[in-house]
Length: 154
Image: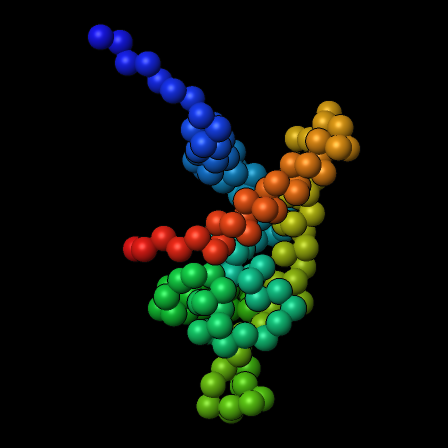
C-alpha cells in the first residue's frame, strides 16, 4: 500500500532549513566571501570572529557564547591567531588570565564577509515586497530566539 505523506508547516520548515543548511550554497558563498576578504576562513572560524565582535572575552566566555567546549574554541582561536585575526592579551581584571579580541584585520574580515552576505540576501529578496521582507525578518528573529532557549540534550 502506498504511503501517504502528510505535509504540515513543521515539515515545510524542516525541509526549508535542510535546504539552507545542507551546505552547498552556504558553503560556496562563505568560501567566496572569505577569498574576497583575503583569507581562507571556515564558517566556524567566522562564527568565532562574530562572537568576539568588539569585545574582549576570556576563552570560557567565547566557548559559552558559541555553545562549544573550551578545547574546541581554543584550537579555533589558535588558528585565528596564526592568521592574524585574533590576539590575546592579559585580562585587566586578572593578569593570570587571557582575553581574546579581534585585530584590525579580524574586524576588516568580519565587515567584508558580512557585507558580501548582506548583498547576497538583498539579491535573494530583491523581488519581495517590503512587507514580506519585514514579516520574514520578524518571524526569522522570533524563530532564532525561540531556538536559542530550547535546550537539546547531547
